[in-house]
Length: 426
Picture 1 (cartoon, one colour):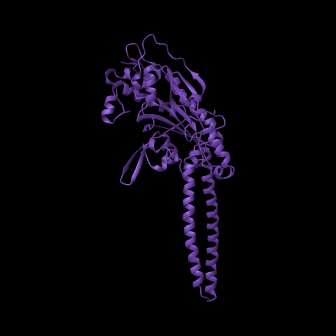
Picture 2: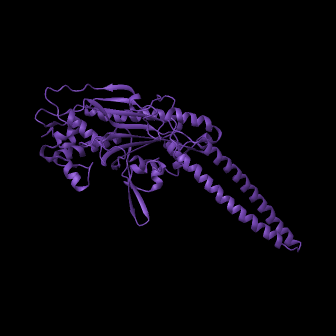
């Protein structure tokens, strides 16, 4: 969430920036009214506490003098009742302010272009040249239907729409991609491999910003009174590993990665990408998370994007790097780069990785801190995350870019060690 100081000392300015950059309407009057009530109740509560302490001291003095303390005790009891009511009212106001704060998006970095949607994103660079085919290209669904390797009907039979079953060599290729990505990030990029739960509690979802705003996009399960959420990405458990901790300065930046199942309800996406594996309720991803010092996080963002790009380069997949505009950024991000891979069947680039800096937006919710070596005091860290990569979409890109006229698929050199030297799946 945003620094509460922005909502107290710079409310009008913050509201104007949110409107300009995020098209978000902050209810200034409601915040001002609640803040005024918070200040009033806070002052009254402090005064009542002081009065109760004074009267309690007077009771002891009166007893020492042998005086009747019943009136003083009645007064202290009355003060206690008023204090309890004030504390309850103050807690209610603070909860309302916190509820508003949890729904406010992060403020974009000054380097992020102002825009309304994806059409205002800025292309930063391209790598690789799209292949020219001398035959009619097939999409990944047509290619995957050979031998029943990609089976949407079976997925629908088992679970419903937007689920897919992979079989045979295509399932092996999918597994190889995940292993290749993990080996690259751990062996060359310095990430610590983690195996994390894919069911997390509400505190974890709130810590990274999925709750309360995006509950409709999540899958949840309840056993008795216990509610758990299926993770939309390993960002959630990985980032929450530093929740309520104070890191040593020398430990940063932390680099963590995990290969997990991911689950998204895809609320609002009905009718989009219904064919094949592009937009699924269940998919797999290798996630990268970094926890950095405040002054280092933008350098870490550039590094993280480079790590995701390296996957695509080693696989020989043409892509472009896009800087997202303010209107297309995620809720908690201050700056986001998307990598978009070339899909021959669509003759366009499609998102395959998104890398973001959240600055201290998540850390404030998580109370994730680092000890300042100069002051000795804890300060909020900055958190970053990125796809390294989405495995299903990478599989699609490999299938389509490496397809042959007979429908077989050439295996990229980087993946052959993971498929026992196989150079083609047919």
